[in-house]
Image (cartoon, rainbow, N blue to C red; front, side, top):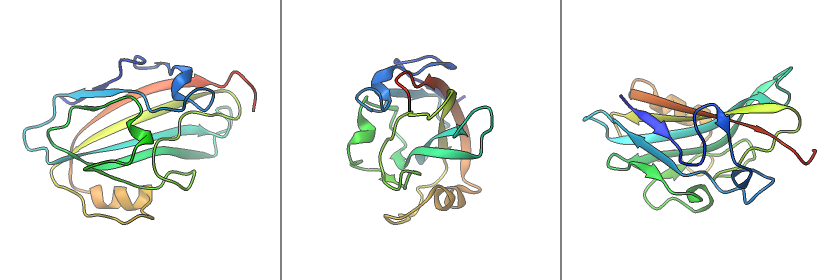
Length: 159
């Protein structure tokens, strides 16, 4: 069974400030185990379904997409989302750029889902303007396992 964890926070726990817009905005370290034997690559999608207000969410905000991580990979170091991937690719976030954009909710306590998918293929290079929809379209029929880590964050310093 594919499992995704972070030494920085537990499932449903609070994401430390250093991984948000109020801190260094560095991606948290992530670790995974239990990938199926026929895994050829991994896809990571980080999003916030509570945007802009958890009391009246209007959209899912994409914070990071990295795809084609190698089948032998077992995690990402802290800050990996601030560095261009060496052997993986990235798609655009809702900030209009690639890379990690940490929690920065305008109001309320938001949930952030880190979804890791084990793929039975390596996805094609979708280009520098690829979106979540493009990545998910390419993933169709190829996800062989999925793990989710959810963290929360409440912006303390106002909007």
